[in-house]
Image (cartoon, rainbow, N blue to C red; front, side, top):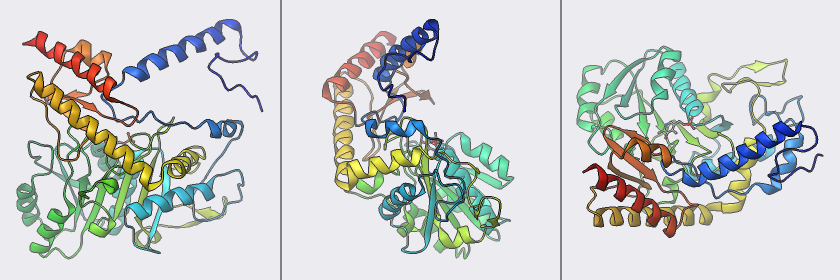
Length: 385
Ligand SMILES: *Cc1c(COP(=O)(O)O)cnc(C)c1O
């Protein structure tokens, strides 16, 4: 064990110039992390107790539910973290499966892959405001796809979905639903989608929930959105480094086990099942996911959600009081307002598209933080008038 656990910038292993370089880098990170306000990055994590893990090369190669001849892994913890999220997503008892991914993108790719294996001729329907990575995944998988219009709030336009499905009734639909769009945190409603599919008497269907943004928020809302397995999802992707919080990107994908069994094939070389997208898998990120689940549990997540919602409401109210046309979707932590200057976009790392900018309220923020941020935005927009 090295025992170097401070921010001093490396130990005697490095030449002095490189140690200084690290120190400068850490100072830069501290400053930028405090300013970041436009991306969903929770910073209230504290994984100090896991620091000894940096002395081990953990590899959860392959399926988390089957053993492996490689023993330096964290599969046991991974399964516990998955169980927690499967429960929150109301996964069918005994018929779910999942793993800790590299992020929401991999989870979405996985869901689409399962859908394609089940419905090779299927057409993927996804809305205009879907994450940019999905077009790439559809290209990887060579799946037919149709873009559906979005409503002004970012939610799928169900009338357009109905009309488009009608024309292709002979082909199984694969619905790619957004549970929190990137710009406005709009959620597509699985209840609405399913009733359209029922109305059109579509027998075979697949629904994937892209809950990268809201998967760790939606289960804890008083008005629970319709997005999970009980609402008809076949697979769900969640990001681990967004609302949950993790020092490195990761995510969780969950799917109905019966779907996964269709694609599983045993690989003798690793003594495991080749059910995952990548072979070698990060063994550290499942430990962060496990730690977050144990530290917060359901009450903790609920409290973080409530606190963030209250701050988001405060931000909207203050911006409006300053004469700014700010808004948020119901139960959203994303606060939307007219596009701010490039200077402020860069300074506060505010995502901007379609003429709007946004702040995403995260659990590490507090009232003074929000008030200072609102003042900066108000001053910036005042100057642009
Ligand atoms: C962040 C996000 C993704 C991509 O997830 P990563 O964890 O960045 O790979 C996909 N869809 C939505 C809606 C997202 O918010």
